[in-house]
Image 1 (cartoon, one colour):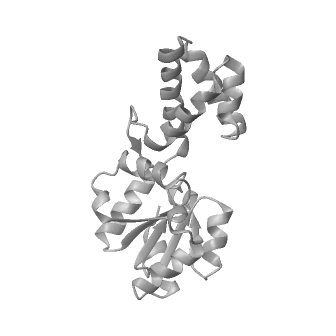
Image 2 (cartoon, rainbow, N blue to C red):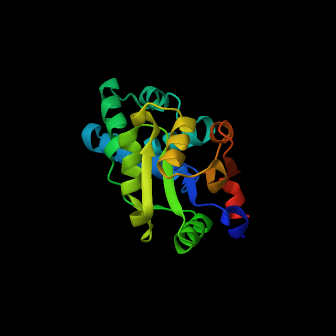
Length: 202
């Protein structure tokens, strides 16, 4: 990883959170573990098969209707969907979220190079904040500025532009690091340089 090729002429680097700084599944699988434990405690249903089902369903089909499928499979009362959703927002994780090793090194290089680090993250703001609070930042937290897309009610492109304006920067002085085509499209719509996070790991 030659970090200089990406940031030598940049003043600010903007990151998404999930699957960019750490794997989203590291958060979700711990939420599912806690939910399975909760159901075992309240309904005396064995947690292990519930967790195994949720893990397999998530890995094969994603998060879509995961609670409904699990409830049907194990006869779980639909009232517990509230608890399932609440855990996504405020779960106290058994294990801290760990940054990808290469991403941690990349961000540390940015700090040494006096580059600004910004996180612009989509999704439920409470859930995203909960992830941030339970990430092992290795001291980087003091250098982070965070924007929650859903809280601001703006597109990522608009937020990117506001960040540039507020820091008196041109598009040539910023870099966006994301993990999907949407992030890429939002960055390129205002002519920001974009790289996929996978590029950091090469």
